[in-house]
Length: 272
Image 1 (cartoon, rainbow, N blue to C red):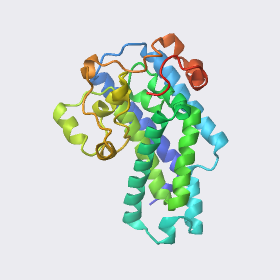
Image 2: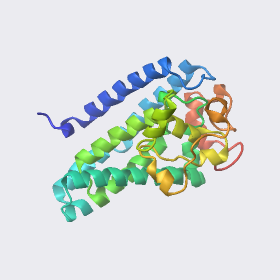
Image 3: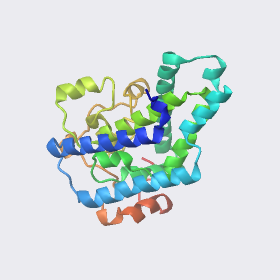
Image 4: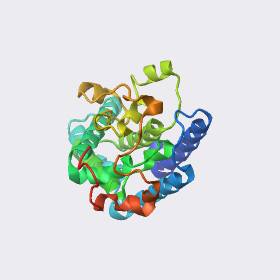
């Protein structure tokens, strides 16, 4: 049997494309909200950003977190290797610690102006759907990769753990941004173990207090523990306004304007 780590890029691509198609179909069949702007224009920009993110990551950081994990494992670097933490314990600990790291990274990107200028491109989307889960500025993607690589080197995270985490992160990002109507009872149970679309949608509200809540990508637990959880939007999911108050014109949200967002003067508040 071929191990999961034998062809990591192919595995990630297959999971990404497969889940994207499934979620896109489910959104079409069971939409949560009516879209407010042109879907083809948004998807063209959002998917073009995916290509630019991939290209930027390959050019700037040819040594990806997975490759670094292989390197560290072979040389016994990192705390888990030093203390011989392996198997299921290392896998579970790595997934939990990486998810906690991404939670605090997300909060940092909202709190500090330099990082918020990058991250606000993600929040400028005027609708939310599966494509929104891929909409991150290339510079933010590179910074996020550097943070994960630092964690891999420090902890000695195994190649399998980092591969599974990156697959889960991509999958849950697309799922949590999906314009998908789930039965309320199912949503209530699901959000005990994973961030659901209704939970994460609150985070994309134009209301600042709601924007500064529900930072989790995979697990909802960190928002509960660190006091950043908001159960429902003030205006309800059908009535809430998504995006940023400063960017409401779709003509200003094409690919090139999106890439320029970190470098243009903030038309309103500095941080959310």
